[in-house]
Length: 313
Length: 275
Image: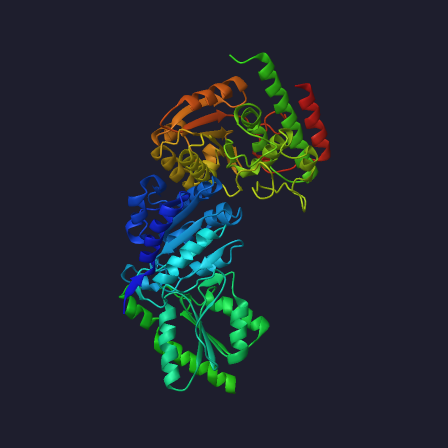
């Protein structure tokens, strides 16, 4: 199966957008070769600004460019873009609701060998907590391209979470990404599994295994974490009566939290969150890390069976 | 050089802004008089002489931009905007009150003429860089002005941005540093010395001018020199007095963020009448 990293798709989408729209400008903080903004930089050097290793300045400058009528994409690794520059995002972008697109790569534990300092597991929580912020976590290269285009159509701050490793392609070009709408990848009646990003392809695999055992999973890709598509979730959960969430993020504050908030208030059912369990990561090959921290197909299958059991109690 | 008429007009505007600042903060019961008063001449020169603006069209695309990076001097910015006609003067008496268009620190969504939401120190220069780059990309020829505090430059981000302004040769950017020498905890040189300020900005590749920040001729001269300087941004280090114009507030860090009582407002206004 063809695999492409979401950051690769982002880099290509930027070049496409740059050709179409003179107002697109791109900023990076000395990671252009990794975030893939380098391609835009080569094609449109007058509209590409390397800020050096200075993420606060990266986000602050992007805010000024947006206030000056441009559509800036600011990129760095997720850990620096959101952690290092949180106050700049809060006060200079989200509060004044400026049209800045923060496209952060190397999110999550799949950063791998660089270790915990670079494995951002709290960015969804940080960005989701900010008023005015839209949060997107695309699941593959196709969705990434469409999400990046949608972010330009939308006026306001957007956080786009991208990853380092090559990921399986889930969607074909006919896929219609709608900002703020969940994408149902498989209909099912027994259990709802909601995931985002890297975990979506795992969830589809888990759903197949469950099917072999006679369990029908309803699979939702919640690629827009905010604004949260509560109605798609509730519709599914009213039918299935059990939910599993899966994300490459801390179980605190991310997709699992967003789902829990809605479910506990509007239709309480058995629920289990898969994510990194309130701890830092470590160095290692991405796949081994995913297994060690319980972010894999088997764990999703187990969790689905567990919530099903609780439902039938 | 400059006509007496112009200078007298600016001086009387400065006096009006000082009175408004004192009255606003007095009515609000909280706010930051010290650093508002020290920057009065700078902001007066900008809003009543230098900036290309249209108060009837705050979003005029090619306007010059002013960013108050030391956002706690909001009362000064509001007084300038109100007296320049961006919104009715009555609004300034609502400062800091629930539902007012005048937030405790500037918010670009709330107030006509406010270019950037500020208040978390250190961010205005980077934002100004972005606006200056946008101006160059648009070939719109607008200029960007930013006012920083001397305590504010303790923020590391200021120096990230300072590096970028000169790296990108932002000669359409002019910065002022209100060097009043005091911050909340005391003299800046005792709290965390930013000295030598001029050398630092020079080393970061800026054209640096040091002036008396209460003298209009010096301010206007510096602005002119900044406009004529090509290939680099200009930093105007303005020596000022915190609390300038009110005897009991001058050079007293206690007045950084404290409102005067009704009695003190009366005394301050009386002092300003005598100028």
